[in-house]
Image (cartoon, rainbow, N blue to C red; front, top):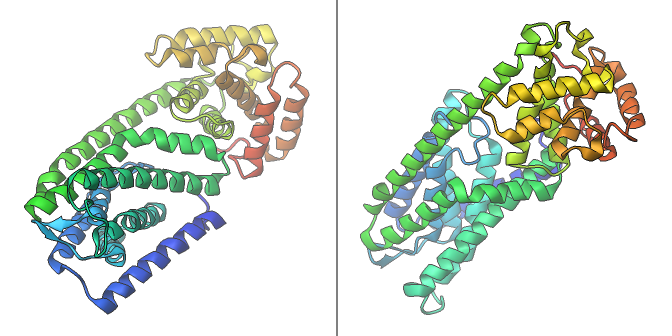
Length: 415
């Protein structure tokens, strides 16, 4: 991540700050409507932010309870049978105040909330409030306060808010990385049935429950989401451990002296970046990363190590033999069979390869050719371009060049 946010991200930050300042200013000037309700939801959002402890880096929604509480306050039409009177500015003010209060302990520990996460929270909750609050104030259409009309409006607002958040998240990643917007948006939409659906469902249940039973409904509906959050955290921990196991296995070639230190990690990271550039996402990216980590494992079957581990410089029959040996080893490790297919086909002519194998072959050759010299990057790319007639797909080579032109990972970074 750059020290200074790109222009598109800065615009999102500016919009979130402007909305938060307007909401706090308006509420401070006009006073708080239903202060007990506002306090209860503000505390809920703060507790949700506090529950971010232990969230793994990069988690899509590190504070689901806070997100559900903020969404519930935007969708709240009543409290124990009495209509609520808060408007859009107060929703923004309560959400901002709750998020800031819950962030204080994290900031004290030097682990403040991610700016992207907070900015998205403010903007998406504002969007939900703008869509929903006017339909339940004075002069609102009849039939929307209760009954099927109320449920349908709430469902529509939830869907639109989820889409708004997905688009916003994809735009911010696009601004930071330059990856194509379409695949990023698909990846965000694919994640919605997970923690996103739990947040939306809990937010709606909190709003409906509070409208009937009052504020006592809040702790009742918090428990299922907390358990869901715990389950997601455990799943993320298992997935992280699984990846670390694969990375450790891939380092066997380095420990044995067959490949340079950090080679597998560099190839995996750069392959993932090229894969995103070419539109891969989700499980396809995972297969690509695992295959890139283990692409050289077939060298363990060699009697004599390849000089500098540079398989790209070997004769094609020898490259294929090492690839097939590697695929046979990978099939015994329990990883998805698609990973083994990529490993064993990485030395085939690119027209016969699946896209992940084309990426691994190109990136591996680039890292082999650059070695320890950062100055040889242009020469390596030129040599890859000369091999596009048979060995390397032109689109993959050009995608690699674009990734490197944006800073990429550079050649031969230390492992």
